Length: 158
Image (cartoon, rainbow, N blue to C red; front, side, top):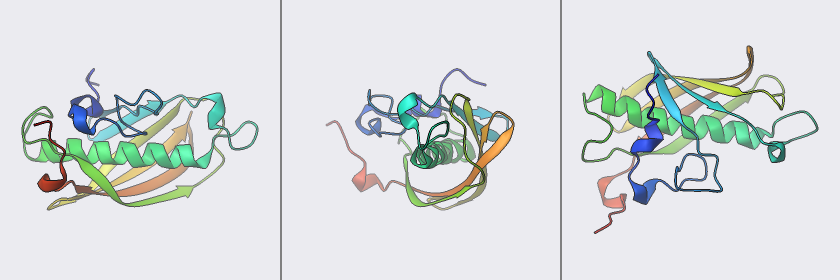
């Protein structure tokens, strides 16, 4: 895998998301990378991400699937256009739909890995399917429908 995460290429003015913003010191700082045709992120739940003793809070799982999905959508769109992720104009995506199926309780104390595949790119929409693992166990599956942020809503520094 490359050393640079998809989120490393987000312009500073849009790098504040609680889930994936590299500039949000209180956030999760989700980092996503290509691994062949899949995108992967790994996350270590902290003690405060607890649901009940021994298990991860479902909201964290949803956040990981959400932010990994939008990051994967951006990277996939750049890839489909044959552009590097630091090229202009920047491509950013927001969640239009998030669906999560919790397959089994997710244990604390295990690195979580989310693997994503792009199902569809159509116009400004990207559909991403994801699986969250704790070790070798599938704990959740999700789908993100991500839409490209319209240019007029993209913050500018000027």
